[in-house]
Length: 170
Image 1 (cartoon, rainbow, N blue to C red):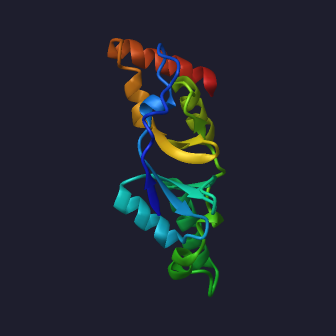
Image 2 (cartoon, rainbow, N blue to C red; image 1 turned 45 degrees about the vertical axis):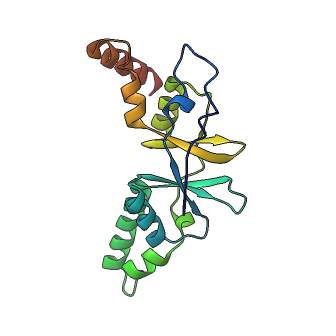
Image 3 (cartoon, rainbow, N blue to C red; image 1 turned 90 degrees about the horizontal axis):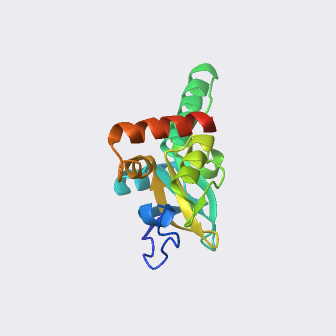
C-alpha cells in the first residue's frame, strides 16, 4: 500500500474553469495481489473510501471501493447461510481484491468538474482517481466536486445548476 501526493506542478491549464488538478487529494494505491483484508486495512488507516489497484508498473488496473467490498461481503454472507460448507468470512478476507473490484475508471488532470461529475454518476462511485500516463496521481471526491459549485455563486443557484446538470446526464 502506498499513498501518492498529487504533484502540484501539474496544474490545470484552463484558468477560467476548475479541473481535476485543482481538486486533487492524495490517492492510496494497493497492489493487484492484495487481499480483501489488506484493502479494508488500507481504507481504514488512510480514511479513504476508494483505493486504486495498480499493476507492477504502477499503472491503474482496477478500483476498490467501500461499496464493492460491501457488495462482495453480502454475497458471501448469503452464500454462507444458504450453501452448506460454503465460503465463509475467513476465506472472503483472504480473497483477492480483483475478485470484486470495479473497472479502472479514471479522469485526466485537465477534466473539468462537470465531466468528473458525469464520470462519477455513470459509474456510481464517490471518488475517482486522476491518472497521468496511466498512473494514479490523486483522487477527486464528490465532496470536492460539490464544494466547487459554491465558490462564486449563491448556494441556491449552485444547487439549482447542479440539479439541472445532473438531471440531464442521467
